[in-house]
Amino acid sequence: MSGCTSVGAVTRILSVGPNRLERWLAGFSERHGPTSYDVTPLRVTASAEDGAVAEIEVPFGPLSELTPAGLVAHVLADRRLGLLLVRRGGYGAGVFAGGVLESSKVGSRHVQGTTKAGGWSQQRFARRRDNQAREAFAAATEVAVRILAPAKLDVLVCGGDRKAVDTVLEDPRLKALVPLVRPPFLGVADPKQKVLEQAGLDARAVRIHLIEPDPTS
Image (cartoon, rainbow, N blue to C red; front, side, top):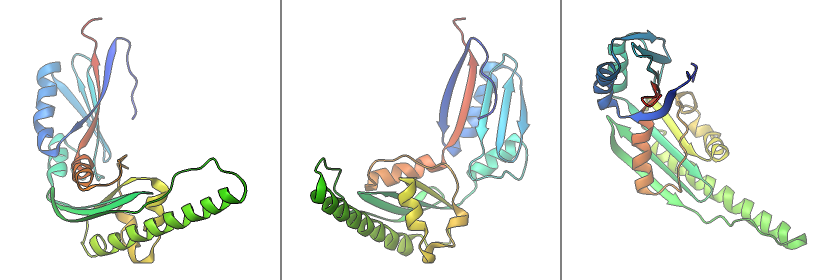
């Protein structure tokens, strides 16, 4: 994010749920004094009287109404959000409507780890591992085709391993999803059902870079 951290400041990165953002903004002003806003399509910066600054990334931008109220309305808007999580050992896809998980599928495929063996043994191992990875990505692709492709999504958030996700999205049957991909790219563990559900919450969260005066200085 842009902006400079002043001497004697405390910096934090926060994630705030969409339904908490309006109250969080009001609380920022209550704690730090009268607040001015610089609003752009991709970032909202709140600057308070005591020097505190909150830089807010606009999720699923751009923002059309360039006001704080417009930001709140934007994050609360109903969207059909798709989630695609892919790692070598697992995958998951889900569709969230209004924050509620509507459909999902997770799965796993065994992919061997690295080996210290050398020579022909190492080469055979590498070929076997590559084949296992291809099979895992193919399984992830079929799940994405079944769950995400027909879902009429507004936005798609991905996570796991970037190369694995890119491999899945290269499938021609998923080409309509590529323009829908938006940040954040989520770092996740192997995609079990609970991981998928939490990732849906993380995808919708509003990320705030908060700089506050150090009360001890």
